[in-house]
Length: 198
Ligand SMILES: CC(C)(COP(=O)(O)OP(=O)(O)OC[C@H]1O[C@@H](n2cnc3c(N)ncnc32)[C@H](O)[C@@H]1OP(=O)(O)O)[C@@H](O)C(=O)NCCC(=O)NCCS
Image (cartoon, rainbow, N blue to C red; front, top):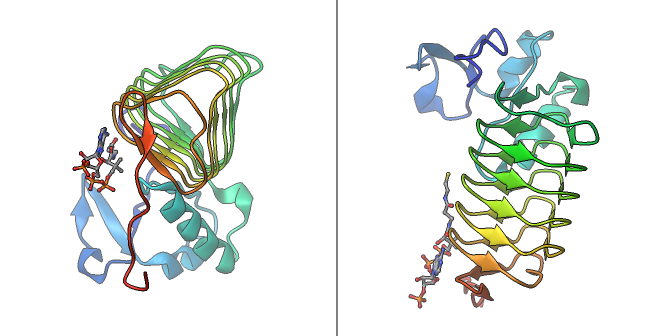
């Protein structure tokens, strides 16, 4: 999107994988790992990882390298109309075909994938991720770093709390608690995954 619509002049990718250093992806060179940002003092940064919790860790890493919050770019597809009264926070990415009706608020480093419908008074907190084809009813809240899988629907007034996940194609009728994963239509919580310690 950034290339196709010349939203920014792209200098390169930053990736901490040593295997990717100096590779070229889509005609753009991988400059190196996070620390390389200290040599590009004027450049803006768009953090593109798919999971909000990962984007948050990357942003924290840049902040520890003295990158100011003002340097995070915001990318909105030209097809997307942002009506008066709607707000897209710094560092967020909004892909093609997204519709916002009224009083929609996106926090910082939110990602909204193609063809999502965000209806009146929806709030997407910082680092939220909403996948392709999702529909949110009015006054839905998507919590900090929560993840809504593709083609899911959320009933009006319902909240997906921080770091929760809603599975693809699910229909959420009641609030999903923090860190919970809900799936199905109507959506139900999955049992928490066992860890080695448990
Ligand atoms: C919800 C999700 C995160 C669960 O993943 P997971 O933790 O690996 O869970 P599993 O695949 O082990 O499935 C656990 C159970 O939930 C069920 N399940 C998983 N996803 C489901 C969904 N979306 N709807 C209904 N049931 C689902 C599985 O059938 C399984 O049921 P079972 O225990 O009766 O066999 C994942 O399935 C999902 O929907 N991810 C979003 C994908 C997406 O939108 N990607 C976009 C990328 S751009």
